[in-house]
Image 1 (spheres, one colour):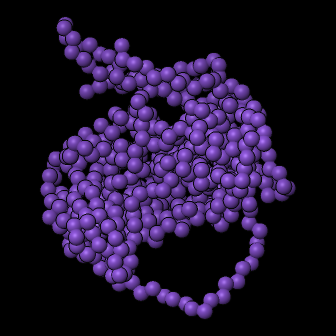
Image 2: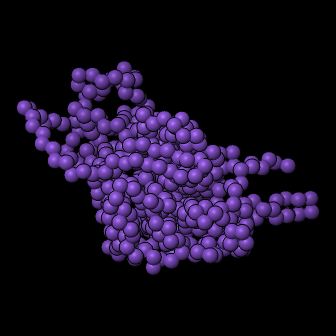
Image 3: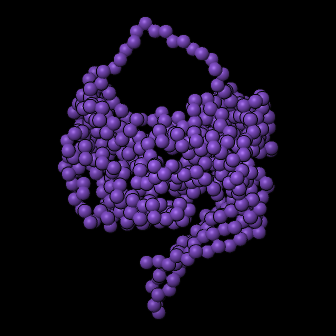
Length: 477
């Protein structure tokens, strides 16, 4: 039991309208019960001098394709959901940006993924600021990759966002004195290439091994089975699985179906992540206790399942620490229970053979194709930044105070996981040693919520009104 008290206040420098909440917890005392502050959470609602104007989104942006030099306040790498919503929020605050996208078209980062990709949460959780998905795609519908791609194209077009597609960063540097980035990019040049070949080969696949056991692996597994392929899932470790219905409980993500979007965002995004994890575990454990045999048949089929009653399960920890590693059960487990898909549990592939894989228990698995679904490659922001910004030929010694790609990467905060204060590392906020560099990611829910305070800070920095970041870590008295 606790009491949650909303608060509001205003600061003078910079001038901000703020909101927050104080959560009080009852504590036993000698003479009865006393209430103590458990959580104090605050956030900025709007900049008083620049509250934002949605009408600015309808105005055409500058033509960024003309000329050899492009001047802009903000460069955004990637025209996916987080990049486009960040650009839209900046534009509503009167700040133009340029988005660099390596794909040929906006939305290709979604459209080019595997065919069966769908969100494992309903549309109400996946909305972007200023423009909702059309009525026919609203909850309980779960968005497909192509529906998201089309929405991104409409989003960029309707809000006149400055997107340069088919771009590759050739070099980058940061001038510490001028606090200014310089990027050299390669753009599409419309060259036409002809490919001639002597042999054309079509692979005939009848059996498939899917290595992995979380959301992506289950999606790919279903795709293979529906294509008529004999499919085997290799589950190397116990995997946390929970039903879609648990997610949609109105005390969790289901709040987006019963509350206005902004209210649900404040409810679900303003607790410390450590407490968020405890709350979600408590809710899911309660629901699982009412159906203790929900995944007994899955276990008997050989899948190493962790259900929500296991004390180690924590979906928030999975999201922020690993970028996944769980499965929201939208029906994929039925294929294993019904024997339509085979499973090999608690084994690792150790080698390829002429006809498939050798596994760590000494057994062999015949497979014409092996599909690896074992995590995301861009969880480490330093490695990703090195790939995007790196230019081996750049020599930062040519100019004092200018950081080249390697020096920039070395000064970035580590990403994901939580720090000693329970805050997510390296995303949505200022980096300790690297100025004017921001990273945004996570689920669309997190992108939508955290993009606002991030662009508010960028706007204040451009105006010279951003106060120093709080860097101390308090210790217990």
